[in-house]
Amino acid sequence: MKITYCNDYLDLSQKAAQIVMDQVSLKPDLLFCAATGNSPTGMYAEMAKHKKMFSELQVVKMDEWGIIPLSHTDSCESYLKKHVLDPLEISENRYVSFDTASEKVVEECSRMQKFIAESGPFDICILGLGKNGHIAFNEPADELNIGFHKALLAESTIQHDPSLSQGPEPAYGLCVGMADILQSKKIIFLATGKGKEAAIKHIMERKISTHCPASFLWLHPDTECLIVE
Image 1 (tube, rainbow, N blue to C red):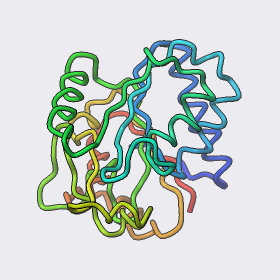
Image 2: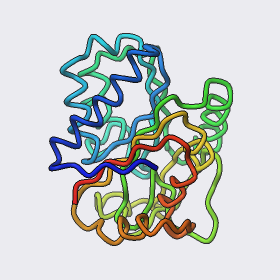
Image 3: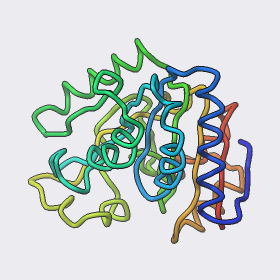
């Protein structure tokens, strides 16, 4: 993992966007696995300034909240539409999404894993860092899932939105698994935001543990980690 310490969030966003643009210049139709959240928002805004570069980009949604519908303002679907799909003018045929409705979970997990197996690996995978060390919805646990799966969410994760814990079952999400993340050709890992100091400290110790899923990125041959302390 290559570590780059950035001056501030804008510096991180500009550096991350440049990495993406450098890769797109080499392969315009690359498969881009897109994270959501505050960490990549600035990067997407920087990319939108050069939207003509992304006329062939293929985007895959990395994860999605369960319980709430895709139309909810806090869904990953709504986030990607606002910050990625519309600004970069990603057409419907270049975007791969999935639904987390409880009756569709099994079917959607199978469909997404089939898509990744046939169309992957991802050329670029964008990752943020959870306060507890999670990446996507791969939460700390004794064991981690290798493939696309339904993940039960930690309390620190569902603080994102109280409505996530108001369903008939425990809060969950669907997400790309650890194997498909680690098989990505390039990973851009954005470590920024309040309350993540302990997780960053754990990662910098270079000790791999399922109780800090982000630590597994040390096993990847081409991860660029951008940090704002």
